[in-house]
Length: 150
Image (cartoon, rainbow, N blue to C red; front, side, top):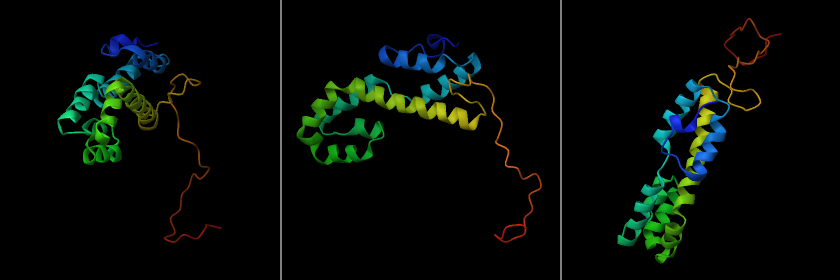
């Protein structure tokens, strides 16, 4: 069981609890790899707050672009944050916007690790190495066409 504060000391609140749940079935090497990728991709709630505040000075929607919501970013930009109402709502909810984005990043990172590094991070398997599935064909023949081999 990896210690979340050892690998990601900057986390706080609900994000800390959520990531702790993800790291509980990982060994230290897996947790370190997850922490490196997650730290590089996550967005800090303070950055989201600052970008939301810029919406009051003519740069509305920057926080939505950073959070990967390109459509809403364009809409906010051309409607001046939906006449400042959307910007005010986002100003109140900036922590939840960052939290939702970071949870999506955590799932993508976990999926990337389980697909790309040969580890199954599912809690039922406990992070054991996986083997590729057996296809049953040990002698592949390429005949140059798409007809089945009889």
